[in-house]
View 1 (tube, rainbow, N blue to C red):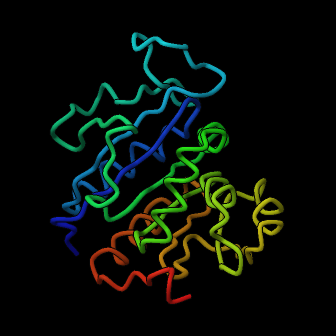
View 2 (tube, rainbow, N blue to C red):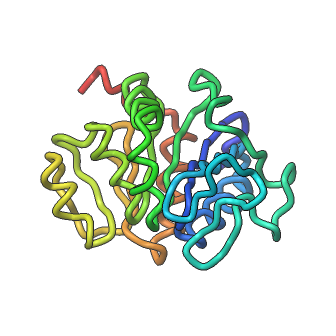
Amino acid sequence: MTLEEKTIAILVSHEFEDIEMEYCILNLSHKGADIQLVPVNVGFNAHEGSDEEPVRGRFGTPAPPIVMGEGVHYTVTDFDDLDLDELDCVLYPGGFSPDHLRTVPEIVEFTEEAYETGKLVAAICHGPWMLAEADIIDGKEVCAWQAVHTDLENAGATVEDVGALQDGNIVTGRCPDDLPVFCDAVAEALATEEVAQAADD
């Protein structure tokens, strides 16, 4: 399975789940995808107007990560510079990052627009919080970390206790242990080009 000529934007803010960002970068870039890492300086640890302190995960991993040099597995992109026309997938790791990101109206609107234009929208663990905020999971089958099941059900989704699910142009994953099957589901959806247009729902 190859993802050559596919571009995936991974959006994170403070307190993202470290391994979910790192694993997705490595796995999907090794499959051939062009990864755009998009750190967004919002959240409890945000430094207003400062670029000196990086966005960090729950366990201290910076974004961009020190152990993976930029230009090998990913490039860093500012959110304001993202061009949806150039993306095939928007992906949200979990942790508390999606709870921070969903407070930014521009990111919520970006997520909704990505879905409505048929881009693949992927999220794992707490990441589906973003999908609920963008109001794109009503009537969808999804999976996620147990703590957000009620939120997703209240947004109209049917929550399944499985490692990964694709429903139309949405792919969701349950937790860090399910990262391999989640990334495979993202890759399969992109490689087969069978992502369903939201307009066909």
